[in-house]
Amino acid sequence: MSDPVQAGRDAHAAADIAYLRRAMRLAADAAADGDVPIGAILCVAGRTFFARNEKERRPDPTAHAEMLALRSAAATLGRWRLTGATLYVTKEPCAMCAGAMVAARVERLVFGCRDPKGGAAGSVLDVFASAAVNHRVDVAAGVLEAETAAQLRAFFAARRTAGGRDPSPGPQSPDVL
Ligand SMILES: [Zn+2]
Image (cartoon, rainbow, N blue to C red; front, side, top):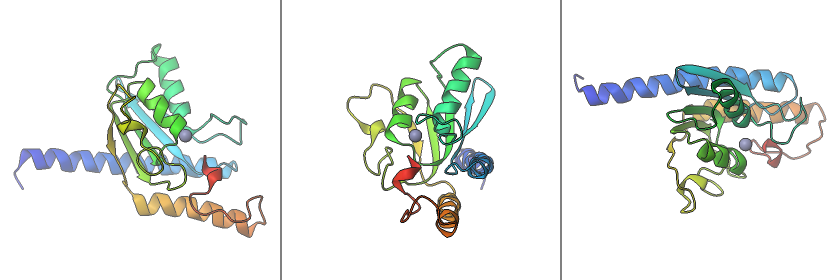
């Protein structure tokens, strides 16, 4: 109980959960616009950047929550190298976003549910473990896993009920990407 190392870990875990909960609220905003509910928060240099998936809204195939958070931070800080950054996102990132995190030198990634169809942090491939990658990102997976997965499932279920465009999507439909 008085172990300072364990206390530090617990504080870290509590912060991860708090940020993921906030990211889930951003994800809910995306769903309100017809986008797959994915939210991201990027903390770097004492600043916090908020983004959500806007692929349909813009429309832009690269407007994933993580990409928008990285772009916003780089533009605001005036540098592409986001050393010391922690990126929180409600779902395992795709190959594009994982690659962008490496390119931006993000220090730490915290994500919610896994994406067995498109996840690039160990599910389908692992960009962060690739020998071709010369920057190491510390990855924490499965934070609020059940809640973040349920948010995606609810979105696709509602879309099916509405007779939407996607006849047989699972919670990790390819449409997520
Ligand atoms: Zn992505």
